[in-house]
Length: 143
Image (cartoon, rainbow, N blue to C red; front, side, top):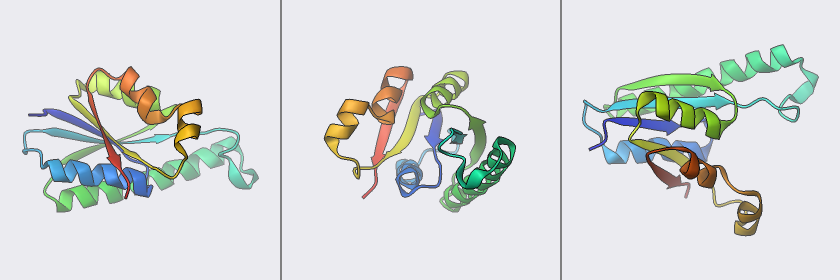
């Protein structure tokens, strides 16, 4: 039985699959469930010519809203969730939080929209994460 579950969520349909997988597992009320959103800012991510501070504020507000929506969905299924909003590279942040929490299971969403060859050559977050964390990883496939 899992005691600590970390669900990576960013509001995309793929990450919403991770929420649904956690709900399907139906962990008991004694399981600590953590919902994590990671803000990853890059030069390409600053659309519209915003200054970095404004871009960060906009992303923080958007991801905060996504976290609230994710928590609401999981609460409707009877789960008690603690949210986390962090900034950095997703694999690094997920791994560090999983370590800090003593996580037994990390759940992430995955898209099959990208060609297999592109994922293989460039790597994928899922593959990198499996190498980084010290617990089981459930990859929820978006259908």
